[in-house]
View 1: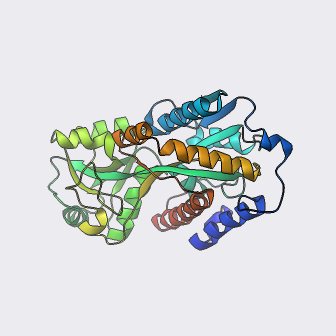
View 2 (view 1 turned 180 degrees about the vertical axis):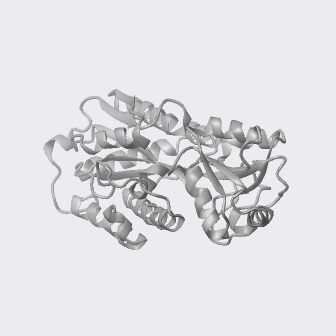
View 3 (view 1 turned 45 degrees about the vertical axis):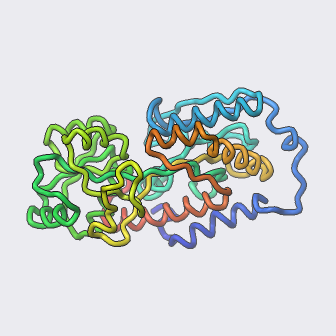
Length: 335
């Protein structure tokens, strides 16, 4: 089993922060290499381990364009999808640690160590966290004909129809999948998992009545909820969403302590010079604060976050530990 599965949340977060200290990202006496002082001096590339479209791609293109505008050097977006994000992520893990190759990461980055028996890289030691870019909740929705109108109703219905209520996901290890597995674990219910190759076919089958429920990014299902084709029961975040302020959180609706956020960020190869990491962090934080960028995020239901590299490192560590526990308790077999 992948080594990080044996580490608890605090240990993994501490490991990340220790790596930052060793790398000198936390202030140290070491002098920056001469090439770091001239950074950037040529084109950068930003790897998106997803196909074009969706917020992962949007984030990469926005950050790349804004960095290019600020620095005067091209920042080229490369979509490298495949292997559950492993192909693009591995390419960056093995790239030169010089600040000229960046990787857009999201929720699967923290879940993959639990989902795959052997990753081609080490999530903890092969990357340098740069910035926590944003987060968005999932919305728990059910087909309009399902006789439930609340989280408590869904739990009761699932208990009285054990093994008959189905839910969809965009694939094993996706935020849709693990959001519901955490829900099942905390609620003590049995529901049938139906994986799809993406959100669109999943939502289409929910609309067609072929499955009963899903957790999905709010923008993906909100139009159907507004139209009355789907019924929203709760949001997965700790606080209510500004997009659906009348919809309660899962926690307040019946499962206290439940929280899942789909998140997005940027990392670089491990051992990237600390002053370069700091410069990237500062520049991307400034980009996240721009009014047009904040509006773009809001239009897609994403909350900008920002902050120092250490904060993002701690978050990734917590996510690895959280989903390792959920995967183990749910009996999900690593691929």
